[in-house]
Length: 238
Length: 149
Image (cartoon, rainbow over all chains, first blue to last red):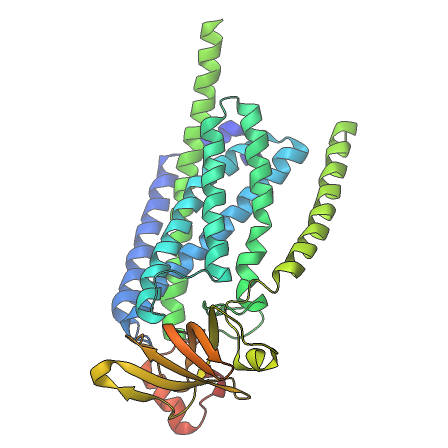
């Protein structure tokens, strides 16, 4: 486990590992899409609109989970100066950013036929938009700050501040009255969602997670290669 | 732990505590502003009629909806089962607008009991099920009242 903490160890994850990760992702997504778009029933109120949920909910979960991972990595970066965690956070950012965009986009597609509006400023939607901006600022801080160590510091601080937003997103629907409905799946209660709809949702979530992992490994490899390239360039200049 | 590392851990823990205290203050002051809609009871407790656009949320009272299809005007009652408020609205209703279901009306108050609706949003709850299951539950009398938000 700890060997993964060393930067270069990623190169031992060979091509067949990536191949099988890809196969797992594709089969989960195809299976999940068949279940959610064809096999699963309509909702008694929403009709076919409910099928948007099978993309919206996994994307939202992952957007939150990826940011949580980035925030925790950033704490370890700042406090213990273990450099791999910087690279973890940096490689995760675009993945979470994409998921948060998917979440907002599919949410508004669902909102129009269900609520009667694409967008409204309730606590859940607003805090989710704040998360998107945290992702954007995090990515931009790496783009604009040229010095690696300065960028590492400021991006980590940003991610740690953004961590405070996560419980706000999660509990906004309980603390305040919002247009967005409360969570259907809670750890403490039986789900308020029928098993025939829960199953495709969970499979889609698994598929999305494997996809996130797959992209993460590729991005991580790229980041490490880039670092080594920079080191080489500097050495050549001298 | 090295001394510098110890120092950083202390810095970090102190800033977390400070942030938590600050957060609590911000949270408390936000509590009033983050209300997306008022319930009819909230309004009846208010001594004066709020001016400008406000949102009122609750259930559409059973068999209270009056339609004038040719002019697309609607009148109905929003209730939180304690207090009622009368709503008049001209425009298109969202698909999920139904009696005994959640609704949020944005509009201006004429007086404490009468709201002139400008926008209507249907509120959806967290319950998802196929139509057959909903039917079966209603038939067997296992229909949970909370499904009718």
